[in-house]
Image: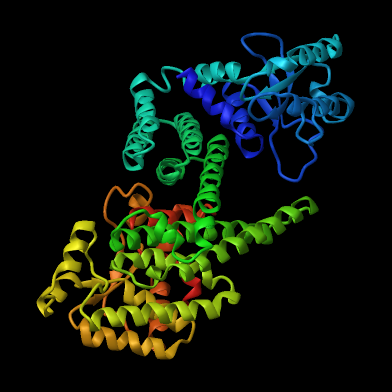
Amino acid sequence: MKLILKQYLASLKERSELDVVLPDLLSEMGMNVFISPTRGVKEYGVDVAAVGSIRGDAEKVYLFSVKSGNLTRSTWRGNTDQALRPSLEEIQDSFISARIPPEHADKPIVICLCFGGDVHSGIRQDVSGYLRRNTEDNISFEEWNGDKLSDLILEYLLKEELLPKNWQSMLRKSLALLDEPEASHHNFRLLVHSIIESTEDTKGVFNAILRVHICLWILYSWCRDEGNLESAYLSAEYSILHLWDKAKTCQDRKSKTAFKGLLSTYHLISDEYVNIVIAPVAEHLHAASTAVSSPSGIDINLKLFDVMGRVALRGLWMSEELRELNIEDNELKDAEYHSIQENKLDELTVTMKKLIKNNPVLHSPFKDSQAIDLGLALYLFSLDSRNDEFVVSWLEAIVNRVEFAFITNSMYPTTLEKFQELLMHKNTKDKDDSYKEKVTRGSILFPLLATYCSLYKATKLSSVIKEIVDEHLPSCTLQYWYPNKTSEEHMYANSKSHGLATTGFPLTPEEVLTHIGKECKESNQYWELSAVKEGHPHIVLSACRYYRYPVLRDPHEFSM
């Protein structure tokens, strides 16, 4: 287990990775962390600062300068801002005299060189000599390298009673099966479920979040090394949903902070998935389709709709973060960060458009449930009027392809879910009316298309949708889904089917939004969802994507 941890620590980057793990570790060691990594704030060489006693020793102030990987000549005294020696000098010259709280000013100070790997043998004498020369009566130095961090994590975060051997076995299995993402994710799900089931009180919730977070980081670092983020992505999504289900009623500040850290890791994994895996292949015609590496058009269709939903969901999370920044009373220190986030969201939206434009398979839903992925994408596009022209042209392409599929009796959208069922559907030559009725008994796709055609005032497309349904789907039940009183209990862990759907959904443009607005006024269950009440509404969208429920929008957007 220590070897696994050391490999994980060595792979962590400084910003948003190693310096996020460290405060949790220090807190669990009983120390009081008074400085944590904060964007836009000048650090004066210190990434994390804490005060406390380790193993009964006298209380000291610990100042951590965090670097990633091994400590080499370039990361020790190179010309970059990330070199360690200049940070140590800044701590001694500026931080100690100005930033230590007055109540701790008389305590001994320990400056900690923190990095996930080892000190390179070629600079060992330089490092040791520097530390020896600068040690004073009240100032000392310590190396917190990969070995020491691994030992502390095993002792305080993953100790036997908190991560028993059978749980460690689940983690090892998940790591061993990275080239089979579904199997890897299955074992990680078992691990998360076991950790959560053992939780009994508020402290247990905090511990559960912490353990899952560390295990997720280990999985992510191994996935990154293997160049396959699939298991990490699915496991991160699963983790935030199930831990929110456990933490939603917990008012403990430590648990809330720990959950935000877990959420940040989920976003980090999502960002890497979008930027490293998807963005490069979205640039070129059919590149993403080719990357699926399957001779089956059905395989390609299913995977690309899934990918589109993931990218759109990340964009929606980013838009929510920007919305929060806009309504908060932010200091000037966040202005640059806000601009960077806006640019990232614009880049993601461009990636989405290229993915759709360069892969025409995304104009042809084979499954009615692909309305979920379409709903996420359309939701994201609708947040910026600059996307209006693209959305209308995409809706037109989808409606035309669907109409053609029904006319030619080919791969029209059905309620079939499994690959084998879709393959049989494709190869079935005699798709008579009774067969069509059987595989199109209900639909969330056509209400979704009708809704967005109405929102964008695409009247002609609305008429075509109505004609398709009237001519080809006379027995199909058109449904629009809403949460009900049981949704809060079952939404995040999918412990039971929940929600309700209105039937008899109208397709005429003038009635669609009126119908939805009326239903939203009569139902307030969306606002009763804990994720919405606590300021994390997009956890609901993550649940919709992962568990395959129709996408929920803020009801205010439909109120008439």
